[in-house]
Image (cartoon, rainbow, N blue to C red; front, side, top):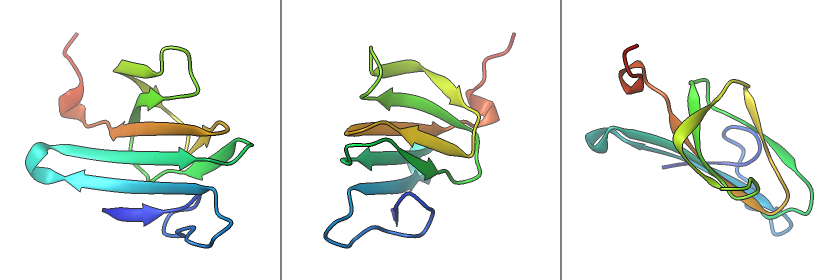
Amino acid sequence: MVWHGTELGQQGWHPDSHALALEMVMPKAGEHLYVILNSYWEGLPFTLPPHPWQRLLDTHLPGAIDPAGSPVTTPQYLANPRSSVILRRFAPSDATAD
């Protein structure tokens, strides 16, 4: 597990921090997840590791769970106020053939 803040590698461990992200790589399970936690009262942009990502959950969105895994195409993800987000690394093997 690798801890981040709104910027990669810059953990917000200070007492007045309201944002945290963690990157979990589980090779045996074939999973690579990025979890964003924003407890601040404003939206915060989180810089993402340079991989293609799919959104699995965003608690700010209606129907927060996204089983289809909507693609995230930007280098940052805006975590809305007081929300949690789970992203999964998209690998070409995840794609279905047309």
